[in-house]
Length: 343
Image (cartoon, rainbow, N blue to C red; front, side, top):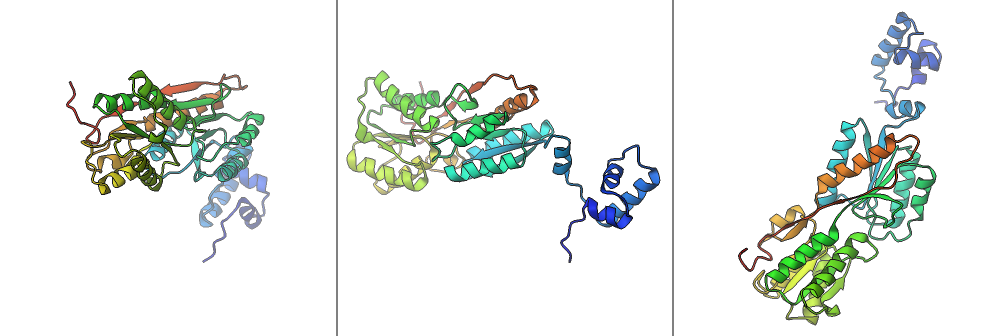
């Protein structure tokens, strides 16, 4: 079976017409006779011709496509953010081109080049764990292309971004653990060059201070927040502090790894060690007990980010000042941390 896809040139050759005549006939241009249009459409159907919508849009100076770069699509968070982005974009008549950086800064840079070559009309980005040099985004600015960051962002007043109030979400989790009588609270944190991890760690430190609890550096372990690294972090923390009575993790995967180690060590949850995470991954309702976590407003973040980007796309000439939108988190208290009945 032939895999050749019929093109306008194929139609032109078989009908002995120019490519421009074929193109005008397919677009129902008034300058082309009805008889010629019928001949063109009859052959197009016979050859199963499919018009290249992207090429047509680009000829008009628009691609009607938005680009998105995410670190990964594993888990609950980014999948739901993308759902919000796609729904918002489709309602506005835009397609979405999605790239994964796989938590790799080099791959992220290639993703960006791919989207620029595809002539997308705007780009949404959540940074990879390893992105420290952000000069590759300067090319987007030079092209005056709308750019919006979400969740993991460039911390600059010059960029437009949609974020959760990570500090407030983490502070609520810490306040809850302290309210349950926990005084030796460990923190499994992420890379501190990322805004989300830095803000969650800062809330951990401030909550201890505000409640007159000492800060102990041996109760803090930074890692890449994967399940295996959460497992390893908990082993280190338990060796250094066998008397710890709670863990607040900067994400749910790492605290799930911590839970495995605590169970193997014979620690009861939450009676001996209370646990709280961040992200509200789906599996947090599958653990026993269910994991306390902070909900990140995933779909709302996606809808808000694409709405902001579309506002920028529509602004001609580009005069829209950088905007940063902050969404409010919600602490979801579940069995992994519930030692006392709520008053």
